[in-house]
Length: 383
Ligand code: MG
Image (tube, rainbow, N blue to C red):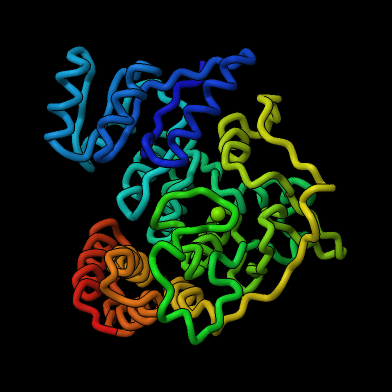
């Protein structure tokens, strides 16, 4: 029996995690979903509660709790960010799937690791804003992180082909997003609905915009740095529009090991849940003769200025990544609301970072303060 908690259960990764667990149990695995954490989508959460019968559920607001309690009188319901921590501390949990979106995902990751649990991590911000904190907790308590992100799942698999000291560099593939071929002068005028149309992956709203700006790819470089202990100058993004090669590891002898798979998140989710095993749950298969040419190109830094802005924050360290992340979250929302042009997302992140002079040591409180400050600045930002 493996007991699982899913944070962010009603989102894209959360719903696919439930699908994967259902498939695994059908072929003889014994996963039990003991807890679900969701935000405001009480309708979908209710369907999930009825289907998987968890012991405890966390919702974002009191109103959600009342609604859910009416439907499931015997269910234990906790609320808000503190509720997420209660959920993670539930007895006898083996795996915490963290598919929350945003910096809100960091405290549950830290608490789960403190309890020595395995964290199947889809929440990038845990490592982006709290990488050093996560590193310390891992060293002190011995929990484990297994990545769900497709690129990092690919890297984890490719890294098993050699030793860490034999790695020359990690190559992280990027689709290039919907504006890979849009003339640079037109980027100012692209609309939210153009940006939301991702060519290969069907994902949540924020991550889709973050893919168009490459903020997502910069976050993934930071994630890779903390997951695998590889310095930033040995991690490179490469544009690969087909999203078939999910990432590669180059070894010092010249060998390059890649992982290929259909662009279906259930494959890396399953790998994280049963790592390092490879069960047959009849997920989509890759037809090499049908994928067409696989092309690779260098990242065009003029097209994706937000990538450099976020990596600059990463190299600066401390709370700078928290500022970049919070500013991005607000600026993406403002772009989607039609308040600012697409290109203002990158400029706004750079402006927030330029205004942030605090270099206090990284603590959870410092992350929260940086996050709050950056949100205020990004809300007022005029391009
Ligand atoms: Mg990814």
